[in-house]
Amino acid sequence: AQSVSQHNHHVILSEAASLELGCNYSYGGTVNLFWYVQYPGQHLQLLLKYFSGDPLVKGIKGFEAEFIKSKFSFNLRKPSVQWSDTAEYFCAIRRTGKLIFGQGTTLQVKP
Amino acid sequence: DAGITQSPRHKVTETGTPVTLRCHQTENHRYMYWYRQDPGHGLRLIHYSYGVKDTDKGEVSDGYSVSRSKTEDFLLTLESATSSQTSVYFCAISESSGEGPYEQYFGPGTRLTVT
Image (cartoon, rainbow over all chains, first blue to last red; front, side, top):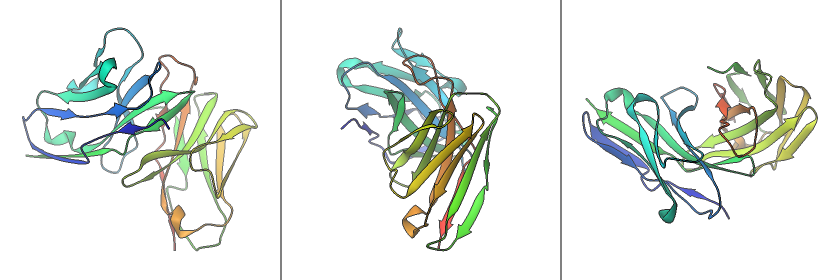
């Protein structure tokens, strides 16, 4: 079955630290890839998306992600996190029109 | 933000009672989705709709039914609520489901507690 795996379930960082959240998927064909963020008490918002072209995708709020096809990965990065980045982050792939989400990673940034 | 509202935003109900959650959109998007969010599971698709009166099952559809009589409204019904259906329910909309730069926009969520 197609699946999306986020290896880090809970990450704690200090402000200004660099962030990398892992995301791997199991499908070998063409995929569309997404990272969503959910701030405490809020709905999901799109951070960035990959459809084709440059595998390094830049999103909002200084986030970026790199699609590595050979590794079936789409890791999310940010060079310097802020306290306001405290949130839950979800990786998702789209196949046959439906989104398949990973389990989510809770990021806690300490001031 | 996309024009998506969900009602109610919070509900507490008893086991065995029917519950209907409503999703309303003002974007005229063709596709609408219902997800549930549970710790450790991310979001899982319950049902989706690809047009008025056109719906299909998702990954976790048992115990749920849906209806879409108008483009703007997508209803999720729990015929007889169980404690395992305690969750946060999100509605989403999308212009297209095809492979391309189409994203899903999410509503604010409904927190449902079944006692």
